[in-house]
Image (cartoon, rainbow, N blue to C red; front, side, top):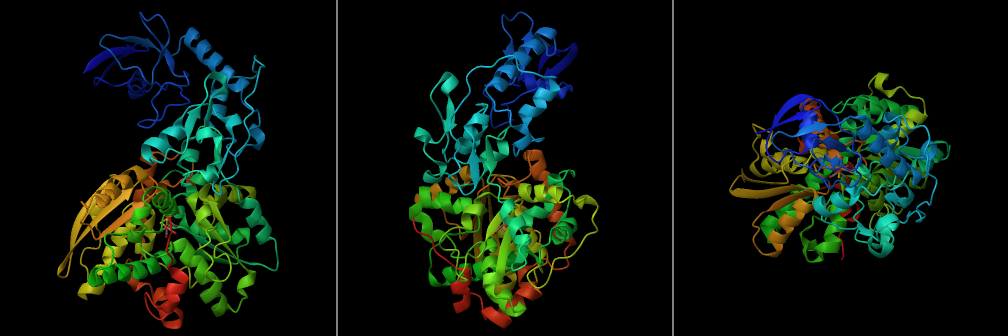
Length: 568
Ligand code: HC0
């Protein structure tokens, strides 16, 4: 252990610990703007500098390791004055648009300015003038608000291995952007929005589509239906101020009704449906010698990643559309017919923890109802803002139930939101369908948790089903490279684009970090346990859908509405 003193307190920490982490252990919070544990440790912003006895200059504490006998002072007048100066210099090149910024009151730069009591900026020089990039259907990039912390680059390069962003130029002209300042829409960006989740300011934000939804809700000619993704129920509470890990299902449904949605439905319903279609597709591939391993296809950032980087593996993707898109196709066909409503009058809104879903709904494949199946996607953050704009005290609303029939679901649909959930839901159903026996223990613990690549072999009748589960695209890459090399003998692989699965999607409430991801995952499995039905094939509304409309899994109608294929 290394012994040192921080602000007169004795501290003993492991060798290699940074001064910043050592300080946190004794309750000393050193302010930072660029630091993010395990993700961005480059000492770029210099806000975290401290005084170290004997050192000639201030030391950036996020990158400096502790040393035996070190004496650190984190809050001397000189340190505070230096931090303030750095902050003022950053602010001198920042557009003072806080009141109109999407990150107003959820901005780390704003928080720091408040914390340091900055009431004016002494410097008035040149300003960064790079134009806003609004080419992406998912995210908007405003370099004027960028503090050059490089968190976005780090998550895009090191976690997602996409490398859509890099640092151009030097000094004052530094720009964090796609290479050659190309538009994001023309790049390999997969729209995952992880950059927007780690950006400390409003330099990268989700595309705000709330105005479209307000307009639809106010249009008497439109029948506005909404679906909520599995992960949203463990996120929306946070978006309106509740603690991470709060289960907000009933309040979210009640809030959506008060906003004026004509029907409040659930993506969990089509998650259950996906299991029936995808489970049968897997069995068909296994028995007929189809392409294996089969890989899940419900995460649109992952689909785009595969198209860009592994086009040779597209045949491995399940042909199933995502539950979001299955829902849209059914809302404008099955539901329209059942409710006697002209599909042209149906406006279909999705609430997703995901920025890539905004892109997915616009893909040319996604209009099999004869219309754009899903009209608009809002992230959890956007719906939180709508609740607040409407003056709804959602945390105190009495809980309400989803509408039938597209709001009926099982615990299996619920767990789609956590990494490993799609696989666990599939195993619950495939086991019972193949063996005809009741599965005694339906909790596949081996599928759960934040481990980047999980593997398991599950005995299903005579077949040992070998599966893998990955979350975060860097982990997907490891498994995909094995497939390419002919070293992967899996039958079925779940790939989720974002770390932790959808509960950590790019449209999630900010902050989202490992601790918060774990809380949302816990809440997800608690919800699953609370459900009366926990296996997709037991969903009575899905059974009725097949009897009344689809006829059978992988049938003609399913093929038309629920399946697709992707091309490089
Ligand atoms: Fe997901 Fe989904 S589980 S991708 O993460 O499959 O966004 O929550 O809605 O479509 O159901 C996101 C979450 C979904 C879809 C579902 C899948």
